[in-house]
Length: 246
Image (cartoon, rainbow, N blue to C red):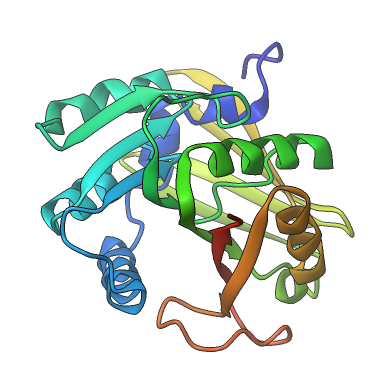
């Protein structure tokens, strides 16, 4: 772990990040995206920016569904991988979500699968949402998908071990009142590695304040990928459809 980098810049650019999470349920993700496309009634040819796109899998899916897509991510390695999928209506760029700027304005912005609140301050969260706002057209729509912090707060800590591609990952998650921290330790190629993920525990009221501060109005709040109503005690997700204020 490079202690001079922010945790997400170091970890997300590591090949071991993609090994650990290689078995994510992309069928569920594509079902979610199909539900969103239907709910939003997105016209064919609409422009979409995929904010924190990783290796571009969801950008590619959205492009194949008929949309003009730009994916942006902080990880240069992920974007280098994603560029193999580029075409006339699909492009990828490296960008820090706090500071990125674009001359193109989009109909929709997607920030999927808890790709928010990696920072240490509310000011940085505001910077990210301000960047999201600036890249949308008037009345553009932002979809932001986060975990349900109210449910996670009930768990104090847990540990697990996973062996993937011959690498044994030791994972320990600690939850306090402000953030969830996951410690990741493993040995690969004769070397010990240590990484740490940290995500702020933002609740519905926290997001309501952030959206109001950054020029968004919340249109809908969902609690899972089937787009069922959010319930603080039981929902797995906290999913927002927010519109840029005119």
